[in-house]
Length: 294
Image 1 (cartoon, rainbow, N blue to C red):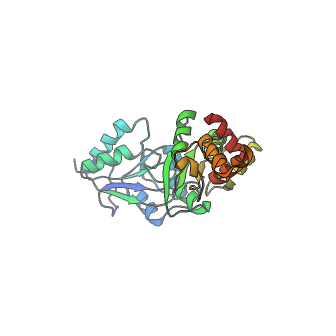
Image 2: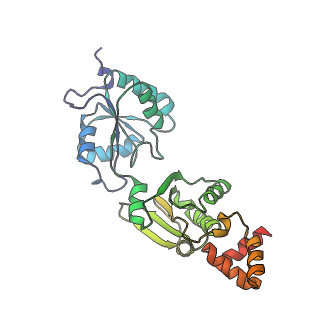
Image 3: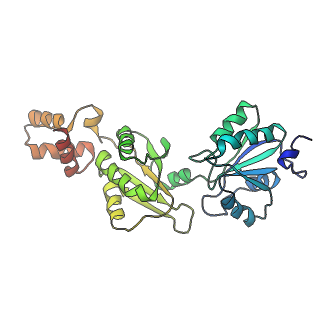
């Protein structure tokens, strides 16, 4: 048997043997590169997160390359099978339902295994939901962090948000539509109603929408709607100058309140107003934080 025969080699392919990580559209089928289309046509097989979903793209561009499933629940066994094909000289394209393989999608196991076996791994860049949302968000892009999906459990999600309270970077997360309201509620409570927030929904699709503003404003908009649908990217602005000054210094609201009242001879109401301004949050949020610290 010749190398690559078992993988269904394409005799007309000019591709070198190897694993090709092909970015696919995140919504609009036109968002795919000419190079990606060529690789999908010339590959011996396409490993897909969902063969039915990928077939829609292949049919649109009249691509007849053989497909095989590669998803979360079969990658433990399928990855070694694909590596055997690759070692035999196959050209395998890896795709997910949308975006770049390995970004909050299956792929890492196959990629790392291929690298360990000294198989060429070639990225074919293209659409990425979090990157598209970030550049159109209006939030600073000079320094950012993408952390995948927010934890579904409330305690873990709140802990993660606590960790970015004083962050000087734009924070980017994916979130499930049925949890987005709860996530924004946590942002308001933990990071403050004045924190800059952007929700990017259905990016590149027909119902694309960006909600930009302070966290409290975004929460009010969401509360005025019914069920939220579609793919969601949640972006949190970096801590502004002076924001969360007390927290960054390791001083509780109660301790800071006592400091201001003693040093500036202010009553509690005036001191609380000063703290809210320091933290960049509403007076009511500063008051709630005070009550939690007592």
